[in-house]
Image 1 (cartoon, rainbow, N blue to C red):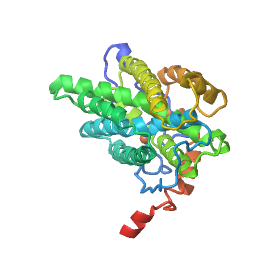
Image 2 (cartoon, rainbow, N blue to C red; image 1 turned 30 degrees about the horizontal axis):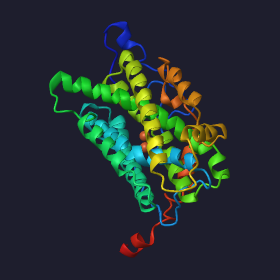
Image 3 (cartoon, helix red, strand yellow; image 1 turned 45 degrees about the vertical axis):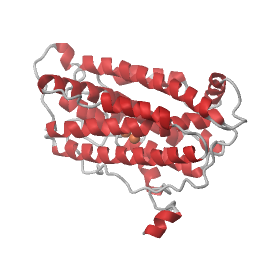
Image 4 (cartoon, protein in one colour; image 1 turned 90 degrees about the horizontal axis):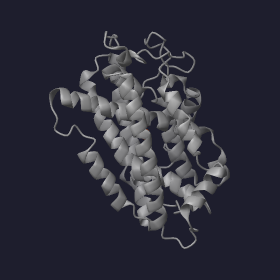
Length: 326
Ligand SMILES: [Fe+2]
Ligand SMILES: [Fe+2]
């Protein structure tokens, strides 16, 4: 059973019982699971990076670097998220939510290792992102762990991190939706292996969009914390995004990468090859609506349909070395 409301001050209670739209939700409005749900589980995916070029969206260095941001940041971010959700497991007595968190941790670990593979390919092609990745790794190991805290302080810090990751998972779900629906990347000739990586990842983000939010609402659920962590998560995400884009552009070894990356980035956004700033801003009030629940986000059927036909999921891209080992 989900945790009951407790008679704390009103500000603590607002948003504890978000309205769940049964359309698109895997749960009944009373939080019970329906017979139609499917379990969240990590899929065995394979990618062969051997033929992927540095600018895998041809002639579009900045559009490529927007996707590279995922390879650079997500392995560390998803490791931090998996560790935090795994830490919360001992507090989750709801059997089905517990099971979903276990599936979520497995999916995020697979995302991290797949993007790490793409990152290694970039290094082979001369774009070494390890120095920047090591800074992120330091932040994850020194800031986003339990930091050796105990008792009440440890619990509060766990709740704070769950709030941060629930907000970040809102962004990954809406980006996942964008990746599944947008046809601009395909029309620009994006390498099919990379396109499958981001669409498979996006589809699983849509599939598990409820999990971090439900875990946060179960363990804590304070509306004040939800507001605070949403703003911190948004500011951190945008700050890391612009720092990463600058780094990726400066370290891109190609001679035809163009000039002044902010203008190229603006052009990339104008041509629909990346979501706009407005796309991010408009999500904040939606996430902060006290009645919000991630089940109100887009079409989960589209995500599940993509997962059913993804070449990576269906074992169509097993690299020759892995085939030889098998
Ligand atoms: Fe992910
Ligand atoms: Fe996720």
